[in-house]
Length: 384
Image 1 (cartoon, helix red, strand yellow):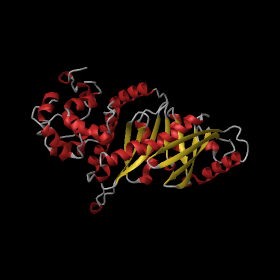
Image 2 (spheres, one colour; image 1 turned 60 degrees about the vertical axis):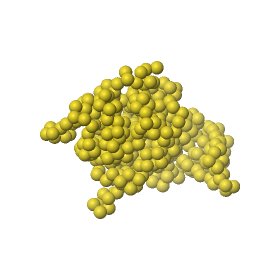
Image 3 (cartoon, one colour; image 1 turned 45 degrees about the vertical axis):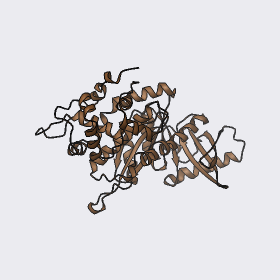
Image 4 (tube, helix red, strand yellow; image 1 turned 180 degrees about the horizontal axis):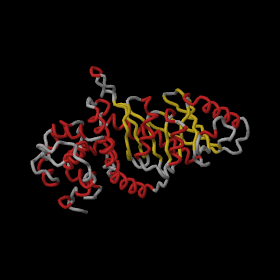
């Protein structure tokens, strides 16, 4: 077991060594890298804005002076605010690529997952609007590796309807080769499907009214098969009990017929699927049916894993950001600052999920604030 006094932040600091400092050289007192690393640690410990970052840093002054290059002491809140407002979100995220690549490789080895599900979905920070100045709430689209507990990238867009243009940009930020990309119905677009296949990945795309003709064609074909012998179809059933409900999910997968309306327009289209969810809660039964197109070959358990993985972004990422990080309550309104802070939330969530402690994420964040040793374990991945 390593001694915490011998654990350094050198490797963490290196991830930001090439990041261009956007600040004026006049009166620049605090190294950019040190400011960023303090921000990451403070958010891990529960900070929700520049003021909280500065307060945490002041409390941890001795620790920070011993672990980071801070020739002029602890930065004030205006320094953190100016830096996070000045850094271009795309350049800021780019610095995390090597770090995320290492985390992803470690997670893949630990889980044994060789074809991860990368769920693409949007989230709105509801209270980040400023109607007086014509600023809408921040809406961003992110990639979540469900089985790894890693947020791999984020792109902000003006509103939910702009996800269609944000998704291709996001996919280009992330190494998708060998993965299964899952997207809800809004992202079910021919160009997006083609980009996924050309990037060396598979897709599972949900269908709804925005692809009305294809959606109805899939429904009709599956209904025809259900009336027959289902010779080429495969079925997988799961049951779950908890939180006051009993839920049964029936996954059905079959080859996509070449006669399907628009078949040739969807690059890589190989199979179609249906998921029927039967839920009993408080004695009341509800049924929900969803339909999908996919480039996956026939393997109904893999199809089921992809669908479940996509639902995981709501439960293990968005819900946590709202309940643990209180992101929905954030009143950060400056556009660049809120984008960079949203990324800090997602990245630190990823770090917390990699730590092997069995305690809740809430307790892990508290522990980062209480214990310098635990903080170093989370941010460096070392066992101290």
